[in-house]
Length: 345
Image (cartoon, rainbow, N blue to C red; front, side):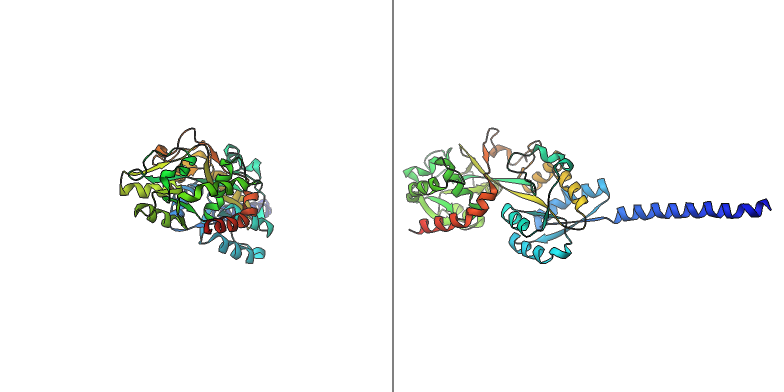
């Protein structure tokens, strides 16, 4: 009888063990199947992110990362807006203007600073309530030292009369309007007082030979001799140019080096908690160093290592300047129209 009465107890214990084990397996299975969707560029950029960010993050956390490739950031903004009530993506790599528009459309969540400690190392202006910078792209001057009769070191050197009609400048909205803003800085203004930019443009006009529309445009014009000086040249692009001859030089001029950055935003997707973990991981010095080396940009985290190929062109005392991106995004259409109209006169 004792044996018979003990059977229910044994069965209950066994069943409890099975239930507990099944529950644990289910939790482990759910963790293993957890997925993070990141919207960013494909191609070289996407491959670099997969190698330096996605795979190490997956190994560390067990969370699978899927890349959703984008083309135009504004086209992707339209897509995400259409998906607002059934958002599938969690993190988006974009720019400040689309970020501000996405926030107005109600697509974004705040990025909690206390859960992203690596963001504390980023410079002021590169971290907001709903964005953190991923990488920096800085701009300088590329020129042909065989045809430019002096060494360029300062932005004001562009006004030298020996450069008459030899300088290429970007159109109004090029590089996020940073060349216009630079001209304002040089005249003592800023994004809230842009008038000095147009006063400087009047002084620069005699030396402007062409208005460039894109990076390939500027590269082609410099290397074919249509211009001798290309302004707002990303240093990564210059690395392509220098292979064509030692006469091509690059300088990050004084007193300011304009910077643009791409940034992370946290979408109202199904896995925002994993998105926060991923953003913090991607801002770590090790991840930043690895990614920057692959795509030849400056890491957003100053504790990371500058890519070896960029070090000769990145002065240690270089003064990078960003500006108030919200004001820039709001004012850029007006700046651009006015700039383009002034160039046509």
